[in-house]
Image 1 (spheres, rainbow, N blue to C red):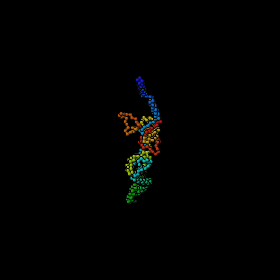
Image 2: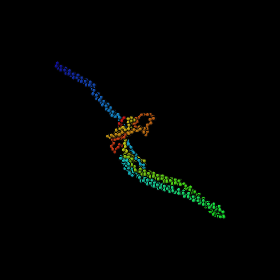
Image 3: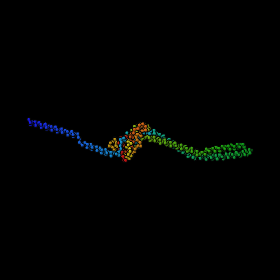
Amino acid sequence: MSDRDDSDTQDEARENERKDAKDDGDKAKDKARKKPGKKPLIILGVVVVVLAIGAFVWWFLTRNQVSTDDAYTDGDAVTIAPKVSGYVVTMNIDDNRFVHKGDLLIRIDPRDYQAQLDQANAQLGLAQAQLHAAQTQLEVARVQYPAQLAEAQAQELNARANLAQASAAYERQHSVDIRATSQQNIDTADAQQKSAQANVAQARAQVRTASLVPQQIAQVVATVEERRQQVRQAQAQVESAQLNLSYTELRAPADGWITKRNVQYGTFLQAGTSILSLVTTRVWISANFKESQLDRMQPGDKVDIDVDAYPDMKLHGHVDSVQLGSGSRFSAFPAENATGNFVKIVQRVPVKIVIDDGLKPGTSLPLGLSVVPTVMLRH
């Protein structure tokens, strides 16, 4: 019995030791969980340092750069409108087709304008003929009128001589004895004297009329000048008719692409009505930078341009100019800051950026595409 009791006692002792050991292990694990190690703190510190270094490097590399996403492609879009009315008889255009400067786009029926030109040419020919006749008349007048004056003066001298002769006969008939002459001779002498006096008066009047040689020539000169002005008027009408005839052909004013076409073959066009637009090959960037970004920006600064529509396209350019006024100042309804309550808003100023390289030869960018320009500030 004693041996069995000793064995049970030993088993209980060992069991108690195992329980004590287990309790000690649990307490040690609890202590380990309650007291974390230094490794997480080290990792966190490394991450913070790396982020700080990355932020510093990013700031250092971009400290001389400003960018904006409020930018788009811009260019010249020429509106084409006819200057004369008529039906379209030739059309050499299509949507989005590239044309060269001087290419024939549309031809309007020219027959009416050709008839107007022919009529104007006929009027010009008539005016030129009248001018030639007036110039000939002037040459004749410069000889004729002096000759008429000389003739009138000669006739006056002849009339005066006849008057002197008639006066002498009159004196003889009235101075002799009545018995040495007859009443008929006296009456004849009286009549001849009066006729000679009348001839002298008539000749004197003709001399006064013929003596207006400068005035008569000036009148013919005025007629020539009138005919000359009529010729000029007819020439202007011919030029106007030629212009109207030339306006029947609409040609490309520059290289570019056809857009916004609203004309078809056979359409009747009204003068001044827009029929299409021509987008030229000259494209630039209009970027609206904040006013706080313009402090160091100057014309000539290099620019890197990213195009949203073409992520792989890398364009390079330079700042061309900065508009002297914010966008709101030139809007249809500019802000009236002097009235009502004022709220300060950061204004945006348009900046023109010229593309230097990055575009393939013969290609261009559609107008209005969103881009992101990054300006490399030099100062």
